[in-house]
Image (cartoon, rainbow, N blue to C red; front, side, top):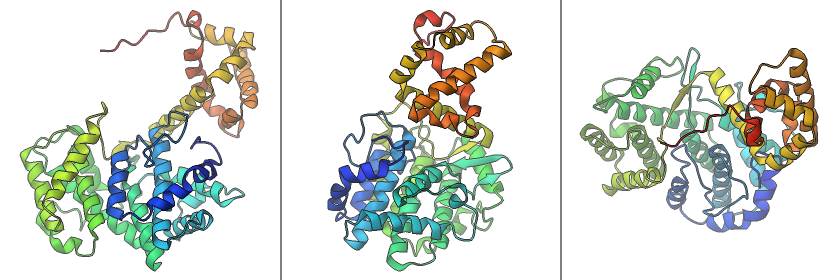
Amino acid sequence: MNPSSSNWIPKYLNNYNSIIYAASSCTIEDYYNTLKATGFIYGAARVSVMQAPISDLTLTKEEFTKVNLFHSLLYVYYSVYNSQDSEEAIKAIIQFYKTLEKSKSGLFSKIKFANTPSQNLEKLLAARLNETNSKLKYNSTAILTYALLFVDVLAFKRWLINKGDVKTYTEKIEALAISCCYFALQSKKQQKKYDILLIELFETSKGYSSQVLTKDNTMFLNSGTFSETTTIEKIYLLDLCCIAVWDDRELDTSEFTFLKNLVEILDLPEDTLHQSISAITGFTSTSDKKLKLFEYVNPVKLFYKQASGTVKLLILRNKKRLLQELNESGELVVLLSSSTIRDLTRQEKDKVKEQLLDICKTIPSLAIFILPGGTVLLPLLVKFIPKLLPSAFQENRIDEVKK
């Protein structure tokens, strides 16, 4: 299964639908803990909620996030209706997002719908992952986070049960989550550049309520603020706060005091904080990457990062076929190898572009490059291809030395 290709949802359902339904009888708290172990709650999913390999490919964080989000939405539908009807579940998920985006330009304005509900949902989930949080924008900077995707799961369950104003509910939970994280960052004794920038961005965001973001924690952090939140929502808020202060992988006295006070205000059992800290400690102990709740990024840089990642992924997954096509195009290989030691002429660049597009036509997965606007990504394709060529064509390549 390839979550970046069309029709991955039918394949996933064919393999795991009965398993998802059988597991839907577990409580939301148990499912949440399983989902948290994948990294989904932390915005850094690195395994499937199935707890077993779901693909022969090496999936990316974005692909695991997409699959786990779909799995979670299915779990919610099956648990609410005690039904295994995946077709109705898909229709309900699409209708939920339509309700969520009603009366504003959002996901649906960016999607050209396909012929089947499953294909429409695939496009919808892909677009959902690429969204930035509209509440947290200031000038040309935006905040991107996958950690808030669990709000979709909570909102979907609420919508299935009472069909209420899901948009207002979603905005409320997001506001509570961001506000709690804001105060968690404020509790740090030693605030790093990353923390300070996030705090300033929270305070200056045009779409964020100044009444919520008060520097006086006592005005916001009281039991009345969370009087209408459920237990699972409270645990989720606590976990988000743990991520906010865990970028240095340690808790100082002030951070721990804040989290302990938050547990009391949320009226959660005393051992909840210990469980939350143990979970995040266990997750990060097996990773050499820092866990960041929010990523502030320039939209242009974000586009380049996503495009670069897409091209690299396509090349790696089509490596054998691509090498075969390159070997059959001697002139192209010569030009690409020449580009590593000198600038190509205008005529040579046109030849490279033309022959690369011919190769892309023969490999279905690379059809993205022949679509309107796809030629913008060709320089990225050229950038990554030399790494596939034999070492004889890479005389000027400097090997990276592991420190």
